[in-house]
Image 1 (tube, rainbow, N blue to C red):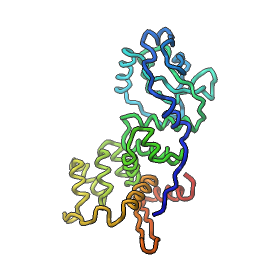
Image 2 (image 1 turned 45 degrees about the vertical axis):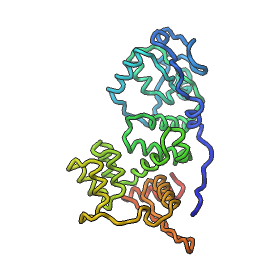
Image 3 (image 1 turned 30 degrees about the horizontal axis):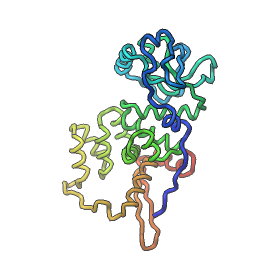
Image 4 (image 1 turned 135 degrees about the vertical axis):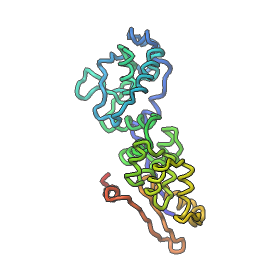
Length: 304
């Protein structure tokens, strides 16, 4: 099989989160924050007035759940801000600091009526700010499956990270990242069901193996099918007879793994038919609609 070319190196944003931005000990109690005390702050952390901190206008995350913000604000009132915000000098106003990571903490701290916040100042350019913002959003538990998958896609396409690097940095398995990215190859109607919460990520993963994923998705929503129900239907023929296929379709493990990697990278189902005798073969890429075809053309043309 063709050997995959390894990308080397991490982006500065990802390297910073892995090496520099570890969760510190408590930076300040409520009393410390009110009095601008920083004696107990870890090295590299400074205290900044909250009115000198501004959000990033290009922050990819636009929605902040009210209940979650209120819960975080209550925690901050009791324990202070445990993890410093990551900021940079605001490119538009050098007297202020722009948030790179930690906008939820900043918003909740406003509700908790804190006057000062612990921050770590980094010299990031606009691209690195976006990279860190995407990573932080992925690490949050309230992203839906598609938001998480799109985050992985951006980190791979825009910043050249491999699935292995992301798995190490984010504490995920490589198979989890690959499986989530495969969801981007599902028809747009199914993706909208995911966004709306009518289907779970488990339902969507089961649909990936169905002959007609859209029809099965509509049935799952209409009948309230469980993930297990969808899995059973995806494995059965229209007449109800179970599909008879070898576990890997007669393909060796390397071919199956490469199919998974390509599917995850492209966000579209990929099948490889390799002829061991001749050494040649064919790669088939399935796209759900013309928009996906346009995406594929841009990727193959190097214009991502």
